[in-house]
Length: 88
Image 1 (cartoon, rainbow, N blue to C red):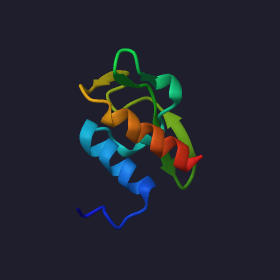
Image 2: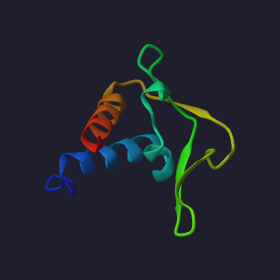
Image 3: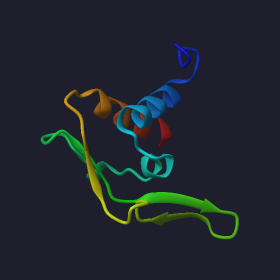
Image 4: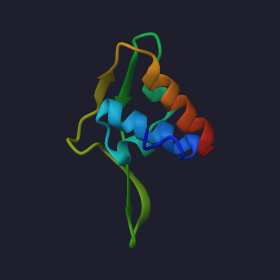
């Protein structure tokens, strides 16, 4: 209910992060190659970071390993689609 008045791109982003436990930098680093619709999972392979000295740069996930995120429903994938489409 808190997100009802927010733009769709923020609703999608918050729901994706909240439903999966994904970190902000991991969500920002997603690419279509990370989404496997057949297996129903998203693989976290990169993490976007920002520092004033370096700007935005790509790094490995916090634990230094890629990891799959699985969901039984297709909701997460619709969030990924919305976030990616709206931010492009």
